[in-house]
Amino acid sequence: MAQNTSMEEFEALLNESLEMDTPTEGSVVKGKVIAIEAGQAIIDVGYKMEGRVDLKEFASPGEAPDISVGDEVEVYLRSPENARGEAVLSREMARREAAWDRLEKAYADDARVEGAIFGRVKGGFTVDLGGAVAFLPGSQVDVRPVRDAG
Image 1: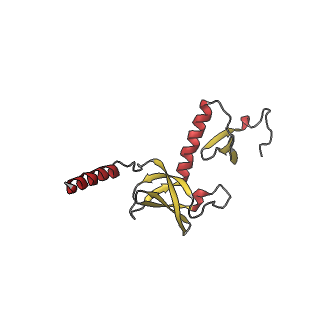
Image 2 (image 1 turned 90 degrees about the horizontal axis):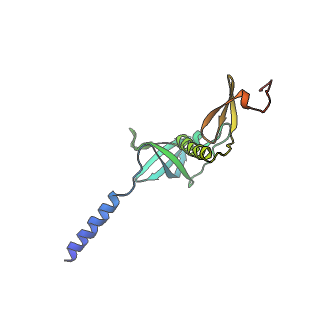
Image 3 (image 1 turned 135 degrees about the vertical axis):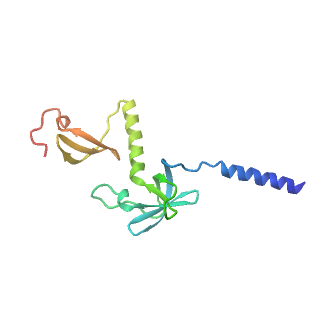
């Protein structure tokens, strides 16, 4: 009788482990930086998956990357495995997803958003809205027409 009970317990534990929410391709997951080497952060996203992300994806334009071993970060799971058996991760895509969520919420709440102008293009500027890139027409820079946008 005792052996039958242990088999039932084992079956219950096995079923529980199979039902765990494993991350799917195209989702944003939390991971932990376990090492930094060769210009890349190695991130453990759990479920026996590790991947590499270039350090430049953790930096704002013109700034040094702000990341260290032990940090928890959100990354986008592009693919569970590449040719080397590593998860293919992207910090930039995770930032973009979060930025779009914030923009959709701000739109629904009719709230104002802030961004940083980082480039000039024909007819206006490119603006970083915390991960999402947008176009700001030159005519919308000020309440009065601006003669020299520089």
